[in-house]
Image 1 (tube, rainbow, N blue to C red):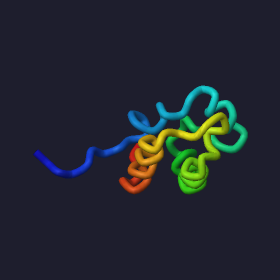
Image 2 (cartoon, rainbow, N blue to C red):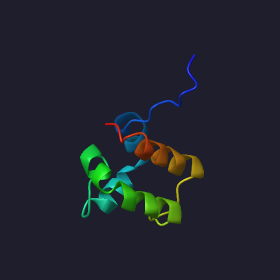
Image 3 (spheres, rainbow, N blue to C red):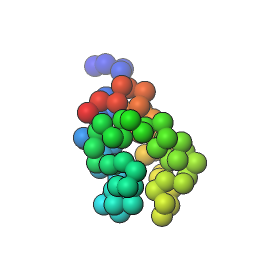
Image 4 (spheres, one colour):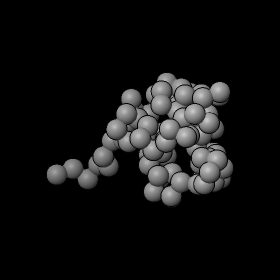
Length: 78
């Protein structure tokens, strides 16, 4: 059994965190349901998540912000 943390993928772990409402609200800037788009804007998205300004209707629980950070640090797998 490995002590390595489980890999975080966009499709399985990150994209489901964004609701239809999030997707529609941000569509003018980037596509929260598209791996390449979120990868391109990951730093800015993370900054907004940690500041509690995204999503616009209320901040994510800390464990979701941590999961997003793990995805970024793990190479932003598709």
